[in-house]
Length: 380
Image (cartoon, rainbow, N blue to C red; front, side, top):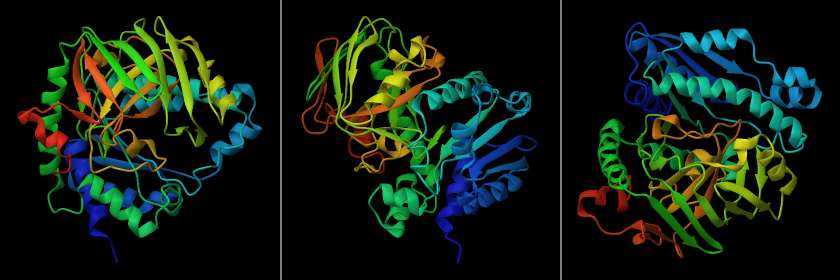
């Protein structure tokens, strides 16, 4: 029996997130574990009149490359991939794994080298997106592997994922349009702020954000979504931060990360577990030690840590700070092969001050009736 929530998710992504139109070229990237959603995306694209095709991967290919490939092979990007990214009007990426820990034992330096090369292609995709030349959305299809990471049964995890996307409702796009309005209002409010000070357990961090634009993550690039973000001024991050949630990056987990910044760059870093991986990513390139993103998680329906960044970075009441590549569309100038989101839980002992005035306390912005749709729960 087909789950109607899968079809609704596909329609939501094709219609709302991507705005797919007749005649556009649309690619669907997924592993075979996500075949049910890939099929529904394909069908929805056909109904929209698009020219859809799939890029279905096989589990284990990346592990083989990282274990057996030469340095030249790790750095190689096929000219066909460069040509293809120039010809796409829309792209959907479905992050669904059968083994979320497949990369746990690969050499961290080799993995960092591979990621640095791949980031060049990703940056080109974002250049085209920022110019309005293509659209992209990343999502997830529930699998046992992801359910196990979240310490949930598959059925409970499916309910969690589909509820976060609001596809348990008949018209999920109406919900996301409401979210868009609320988040854009909050982003506009932050547009005049020059400095943020974030205070929490073992955390006292100052970030310059003057003349940087804040953007609303309203379901266009991710599904589910629910955050506002910018790229901080590259030379104006100072202080210390502790990430109480594990930091995950491409299947590797680093616990209890502590960073100290001076003049915008990490000058000291440690982790209780996975420290070698942390250090290898920080040494990827000069930009890897600079923050490329600061964001407020505002999806209060996502209320638990699931070891999946698509959901965890949106947990209502948290903030995340990404090391590495920034967003040119917000004014960000930092370039790097890295973009690593790390989550700081501020729901119980957190404050954020904007230009010296208290803005956020214990995971909530101070009362603002016009924006209560966000603070009362992005899901309503």
